[in-house]
Image (tube, rainbow, N blue to C red; front, side, top):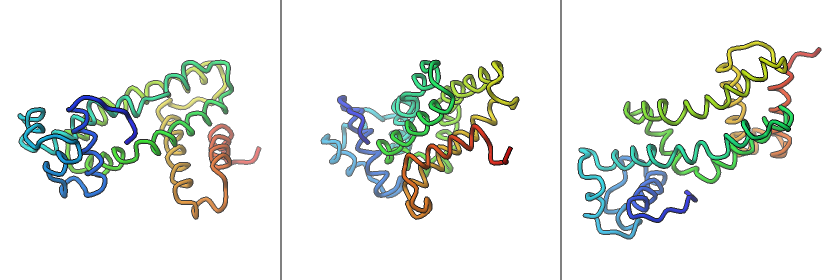
Length: 203
């Protein structure tokens, strides 16, 4: 995780996430977190005293405090501050942004995706605090495009889902090069954007 953190609490969170990503949530001890963070083990309990499951408390805090900044980074600038750019340029910028975000913060994303299926409160936090603001920005982009006649009429959430799915697939294709059959990163993103805008049927 590349975000620069300075407070003791944030160092603890960062250390926990890095070890979670390496050893798994259940395989991590508070002693390992303390050593990684450069603090005494008792210091961790000062910041997370009320959680029955301390490691769970650290993970919850990380998602609550840090992930909104990570997940939302650059989204407003892409969709709300680029009115002079074409729809294709905006879609390409979005997919490049998501690729960079995942590459820079792969550890915390890996941990969240692993744990969200086992902890209902983490799942609730993810779908109530993290997803809606980002989805709302992209929904507005598609709704405005439909209002102005640039896009066909669909529910904005459907278009947002397809776009996010394409971004995730472009990331997988780049991460596992054999799946992309020799396409460059730029070619993958550009072809994804073309399919999103033009569909696959010949006209």
